[in-house]
Amino acid sequence: MQDSIERSIAIEAPIERVWELVTEPGWWAPTDVPVEADRTPGHVVVRESEKWGRFPVEVVELRPMSYAAFRWSSMFPGEDLTPGRTTLIEFTVSPTDDGVRVSVIESGFSQLDATDELRAQGIESNSGGWTEELSSLRNRAEA
Image (cartoon, rainbow, N blue to C red; front, side, top):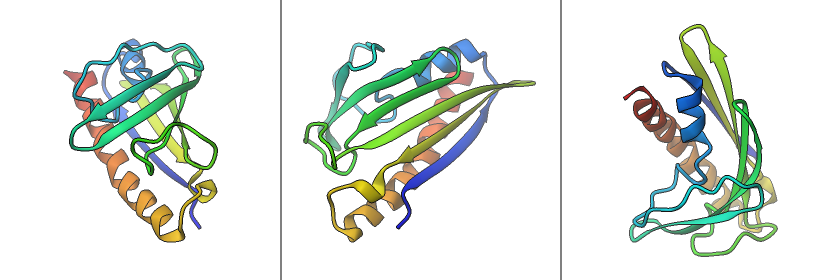
């Protein structure tokens, strides 16, 4: 079974602007209530919307201007972050001649406590989701 999703996008914006956006915990998950962007490793924020549900997001690691990692339970809305219920999201930000390249890897699908069918649905849904979210990130960074 596929364990990860990989996507990347070129963004014509200063690395500082992109870094600020990429390191906001859970920026890819809609929320109806503003969330304070505490970037402290180990801190958990909750992103919640009426349409999509409740998603805790943990800050795992930040390496300034280059790497950000978060853990969330996209397949289990409303549940807390527990082993077998989360995937790891890693962003790499690399300078280019005219901006930056942002790459994302979401991994851990094969380790989820779920049926093969649910895992496959998660990979399919999040694969399209990351394409959309990276496009949205580019639009916000370039605005």
